[in-house]
Length: 597
Image (cartoon, rainbow, N blue to C red):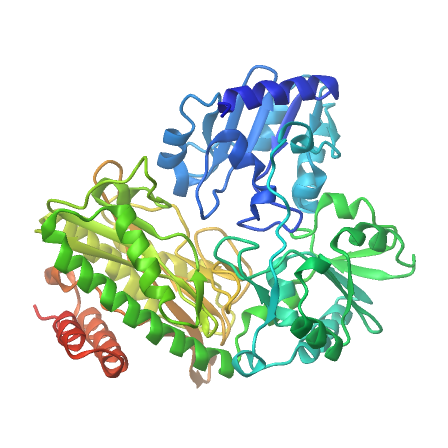
């Protein structure tokens, strides 16, 4: 097998042949997916910066230098994986952040050419890059599909069979969703919409697949809608009789996946086509000859507002997940004293316990299971090379989830094995104080996640401590584990939190080389009260599993915080106990006993 620097040599040879002075390579696909199918994971292949969950990173290759930008979730992992590859890590956030586009414009001479594969750049990102470069007299070539020239054993596009997601679980028909989407399209002054984002398409069509994308039951496709036509662009090898009948019933035509660019190029010029510039590729944009309208926020919002049927089924998924986690952590406690447990072995056992339930199609991401110093790597994934034994005293961080047909789960628990230190207990409690503050929040209509984010960080900041990932992300319903448009984070996001939106609540703290702590539940926005000052909202917690009572420093907790924890543990016990065996019930009762000072 070739080394990464050998692939770099091949790429530089290709660059020279095509008159390219620098290449920028994203880690996404023509659908701007967070985790693309392996066919489009060339940036990971080239750099060696990789994980099953995908890694956020953008590579820049010049004639004699190569860099890979990533965010704070991956700093430790990237430093390690990029050793001896010819790539240097660059930080895209945090106090030492360097803006990639500004750096590129400053380091290239006037008259240089930058090459990109326009199909893997969004309209927004390509425009931003082009404007910055052209201001310095640098040209952008958006038709340089670099992996066509050097990735000779590139994985094929996935051809997995599709299946229909039961309308009884979803609570709405495909026809109804398509009509509601078109109502939003017209509100934005458009007559048609071209959808590229795979989660949007899976949601509208009520169709899913397994294994196109790791841990997300979406399928590679495009969808066009107007008042007269609904066209799904998908490889015909993926179709089944069940799906064909379902699509026909909902008046959806099927065209080949590769036919989409010709289709959009031939749309009538009078078509007012709505596209989301953050989700549509520069390559598709370049083919469009009709009138374009940028937008799509209304459509994204439709998907984020879960109906009562979804939420009812989601609670069933949480119960199933709570049962699997109970059995997992019981096993951890039982086998930990033997000294034979490892991170990788625990990851395999957790997966098996979840998939033992027939409604669990897959995990919702590769488990982030880190013992002590590995817990400080925010998106750590155990491999044969990094796997360590879970022995001695310390903290085990387990961030995991399942893709149940009843809903997607995402939970993080940090537990002590052996004897925790006072410092670990103190830091854990600071994180939990932030978690509880978000969970207990009551806020007026129109409030955004950005405005609530400080609640999670306040107690850490007061001691000069911080984390730089988001506090919360939207979660899809048997689609993506990460979904927009809402979130809870430092970055400004104008999307208000509304009833039906499901979001994670996951503050943390990480000490490189020592330990990491993260505590995560999924929460849904619900009405709280209506007063003379307007409508107020709050959060209901969906996740069902206890926090480690051994790690709380009650001296720094308020009575209200302790009361919230005890009420939450009581609900966990009441909901899960009927689903457990007697010995499991006894274990859960011990883990959910009231916390006292």
